[in-house]
Image (cartoon, rainbow, N blue to C red):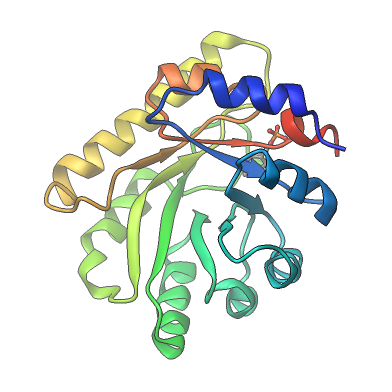
Length: 218
Ligand SMILES: *Cc1c(COP(=O)(O)O)cnc(C)c1O
């Protein structure tokens, strides 16, 4: 069972320029269909096999997102139908996605996951790695780099969260200015989850990834 009221309120509250991605990881098909029937068309998963299974049985017009850590040997499970991989966290992974996409004859949309939190457990690229990737962008013929994604620290301290999202915004703006100024596809700033999406929107988010607020606790 999803929380219908929260979902409807969320849909009404989001500014028109901010896209909602419903994070349905660990949740059953029926729950996803409930959200789908209330107008949600974008869903995200964080495990390749689970995404692949759900893609196989759910409506064709769903846009699927991947938000988890992706091992290179699992790329093939998702690459043909995924709309956006939010969580590219290494040059090696980027190269492998490009290779696999070439084999399958597809072009894959991705975001670069940036390390913004002070928590060592969180994944993400450093500024040096981001520059290294951005400089080589032209080499990846089967990849569209569409922007960046980041996760703030798990804390109640609004100031810390604000600071981290504002840093991510700055990283996005700098990459845009230096490497992607002629590239209209580089336009997405994926930041904000159930607990911090309002702060993220204030800091310029274009995509919020909401799980528990819609689907309940996992
Ligand atoms: C699980 C997850 C979310 C959703 O988190 P909630 O707190 O349930 O809204 C968003 N982004 C990523 C990367 C996730 O893994």
